[in-house]
Image 1 (cartoon, one colour):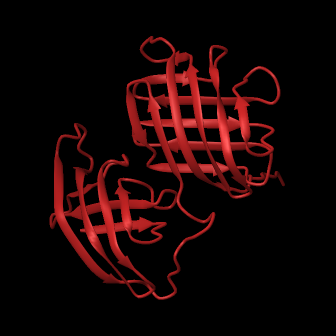
Image 2: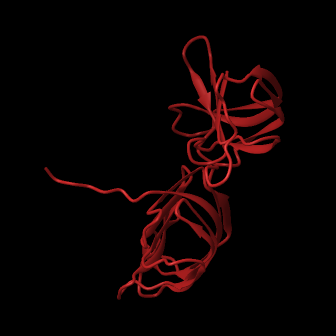
Length: 233
């Protein structure tokens, strides 16, 4: 059995079932002797890792979670791990993350469903255009914001510059990026490497089983990477 985690900044409880390269937390796997293995699915509610103590030499804590057998289409072959404990040395050179260099968080209420992102990618730090993707294994939210100059309220607008949109795609269908969308993104903190805020909107239906427009609210604290610059040689 193995646990991998990132952005662990000190004692506390962190989710399992997330991408530890972008969200504080990680994942757990279990490998059987015959090569069959289970893993926490990409849903932030798959388990918890509780860190009781952490310094530059040692980390201790507890863990539990629900694992799904890999390559099992039904997803019904699951394993539950409970009452796990650990006390292990920390790799030499380890330093605690701090300041803007910490994991991202993105929590969503979309219609009747609520979830926390298992992976978050933010691009455009230090530029007026910011893009964010926040996903689980079942759905993804995308934010596109132009002419972001600092904290403030940015209404959604897809037809004229500056364009600002929110969209959701997943097992329930595709919503957003339509003329029916109404709402705004509120940024409360903004640095070249981090954006904190909320969003509240009603998103028009785009594809899937026909449904009415659906409301979305979210809170986020996202690490923003520099914009990607492409060139042709």
